[in-house]
Length: 414
Image 1 (cartoon, rainbow, N blue to C red):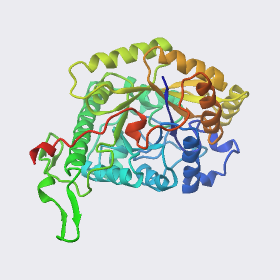
Image 2: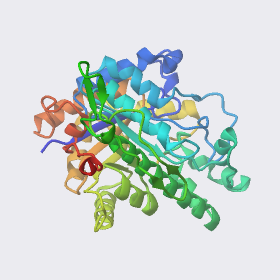
Image 3: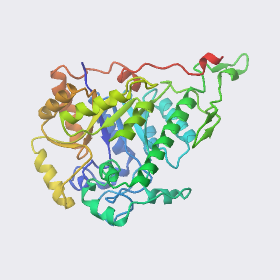
Image 4: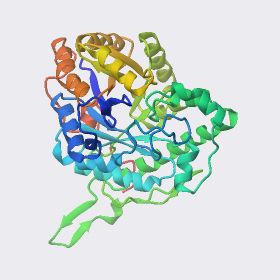
């Protein structure tokens, strides 16, 4: 049985000092050609998909607020637009950008992801993410959010690791009081409504709604466009979408989850969940918890991927140590930090597969080096063990993941 394998792309790599390793010119981080080359590298390795990070606020080592560090990468390109730029330069690999559900309208996100699915000919996904931090709310100016206390931020700052939104989640949750937990719970409820709105909008055009008959002058069958009439606590969206039904019908939805509330969100709304166990035992326990939550859930089983932050090669430990020294602290992360050879990583992946993990999303410590080792050496090792594909068997992201193309929920109306 073939493993599912993906990579998470972030700046110069997931180590905050990776941009100083000399593997790239720092300006490349904001160059579309750099990102295209990375995704092509992943595609040569026949990986299932890549993900693109994004957030409203600048990266920061603080849980809530901007820091004063000038020695780490700050700033990103818009993930959805970046994926759309990369799409025509690739042909098989899935593209999953992050788009926040907080401060954004689900209608806009839905048509953006649908358009990406057209641009990629059926390879689009979406990683919805909440934006709980008060300084990000201040950037938008529509809502005011509670902030964690300054003392708590200072106490937890050394555990912030990479300074990315993902790496701070465990510390962020530990710092929550009851009011803040309710705040985050509300944001996940809002995120659930946003995904439901997007899914309904993707279905609002039936597959054969477009007639395009020049002789009769009929471009579409208006009876096959449907209002979604969604009424919820956070949104009231009538529909239909302005974008026809995407090639996949429903682009893949993927969610990062560290604990019960996001697990519940993933089970209800996602096709793929990224989890962050630090051992085989934790992996088995996490999978068991998710499977238990799926009992009676309206959606089918979610694909469970484990995240790992990896440094690969003969000098992996030395490379990481040098980057730690440049950054002034040892790297920490919500995900397990792995250093070792491609063979050793393959051993771990196959061991965790026995615990129920279906796939892995690897975060390269430094780009492009660790990505190249993943795409060439790791896949070769797994292939030799009969655990990875020799060629792409499908042309869509849903196909790579073994997901069928669903019919529009509104098709039976007409």
